Length: 183
Image 1 (cartoon, rainbow, N blue to C red):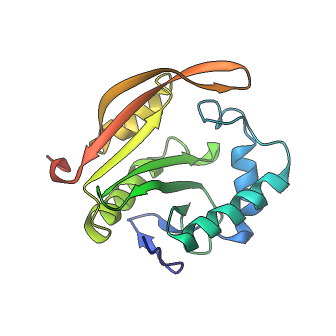
Image 2: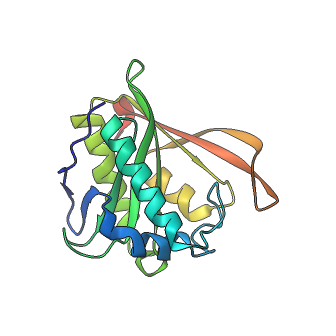
């Protein structure tokens, strides 16, 4: 799938655009925060080099058409507040997986709800996907709430799916069909 490196999605308060090399420090600040990464599938980062390596991987995946990671910002040139990512794209089945997170100072303001609404609309309407999936730690109540608020339904549970820093965790699986959006 082709992903436009100049893509900009706009909502009432936010701009979503591809992650960029200059986001390294902000991405590190987010992903080195143990509270943000508490329910992620890898531990909090400990070295800023991890952020720059991840950005290089993200840009390579975007160029290859396998993933699109969008930075969430208040304006096009504002600091990074968080990310939305689509990956695991199956073009034949027209399905993909999404992930997301926000910096602590951006949480509790409705930003993720707004960003996901915009991102989902793009994926269904402009990209022609028919199904989106999300996998979260079932203990992450705020993440479950935002998924359900944008229309996802919990479809299953994978027990002891991840082992992060020695801790086993389950995964709750959520799905959203294009035809059910807004129903």
